Figure 1: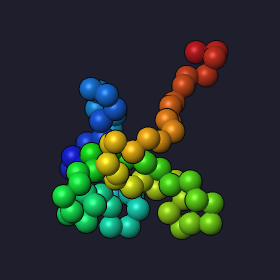
Figure 2: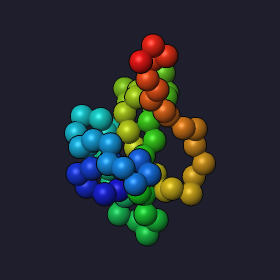
Figure 3: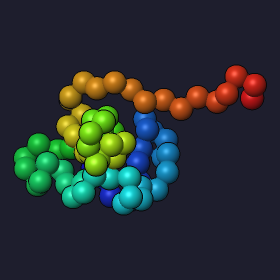
Figure 4: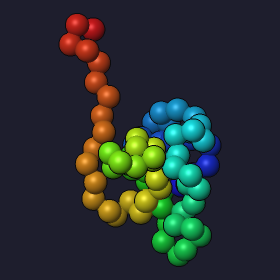
Length: 73
């Protein structure tokens, strides 16, 4: 995962604060051969990592998270 910024498509969304990441992440698979240049958000209800990020391989299919403006704007 690229240090310092989080990219959505070709647009930089925001500076990555360490508070958003799971403990020890991003770690690029612990330094293994597989690169992890994408991020996922944990959804395990009973996890202390709920809504925290983990870096993953981009070839893994996941659900999307989108932010939309309210209809009145």
